[in-house]
Length: 417
Image (tube, rainbow, N blue to C red; front, side, top):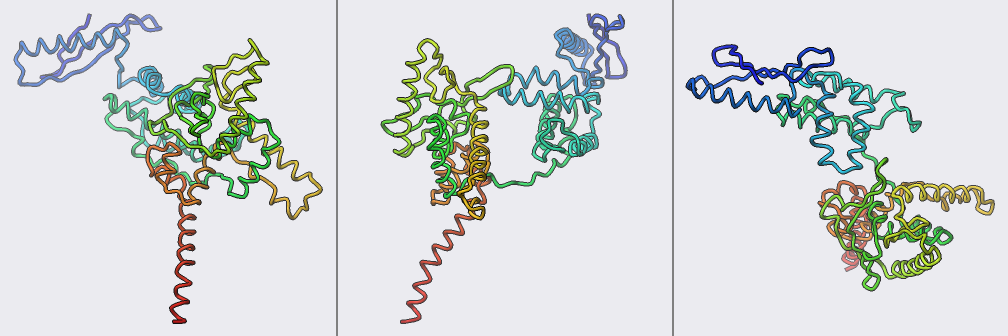
């Protein structure tokens, strides 16, 4: 039962007892309210009863947060339950929880939510940039993009706290996020792409198709893995991108729609790729027959040995090993002179960079940005332009050189005349 105590001319304090705390003392929750001085005694009584009932329900249901006492950790716990677990994709939620539990909560969790200041965040970011902070063996310091991810998570949580009226302002909005130096996306140029495809001839048909399809379509890794044969129109050389696969530790592989509506798209493929897909489909059908009841698949294009969907991490791991093994063969090949080995080596780039390769080659061949953006499934052409600014600048330079070659002969002719 809530009790009401008058504290001033127009202010009141509502108290609700919610059992006992860990020491055995009564756990009392209090809330102060101020009413309009123009209200009549009857209106005051009615409003106080309404506020008391609402407050008591919040306390009993566990939805009340004491902004004067709640810590950042306590709010994060509530935020995860009330927002993140309902709104975020499983993989993103998993990554958020790791970052929250490994660094954010241990460092900032003890602070009172309404006492967090910009200097607390600046000190936290500076700490993340210190040598020795990493413990995964992948380097000494956290990268600038990783530190910026921490800033975005903290800012997002505090923004929700402000919108939920638990804090007056978002302290993260008054902190400049760590600068991220843009790096050019790794790609194969036209010559190295041709070398890559030539090298694939001796590899398993499945991986040959996987790499070739990634190179000519620019599909994301998850989109490739989630392809079903029903999405591949071999007659009309069209691939219908409908789903994406992702792996979340502890939950396994899940299939979802791509992240934006623009990612739902149909992509044309060259006839040479269609022929290779036909061969691969026949090969897979033979595998299915030989496996009999052991085949557990569901019409996936890229599968494990038992027909189940390929793990989303497999393309990344296989491609890295493939490139490293190939380069090792080149280095140890005594028939290739040392001064010519560079010509035969392939850059060790990520599988995702095949997507960048596809976009860059298309831009250099003169395909307009809107068409490239549509093929990649970007929501806006601005996204394409931001990612491939360097390729666009190079293509523009090529266009200038072409125009110069057109104009130069005319200049010479005018002089002779």
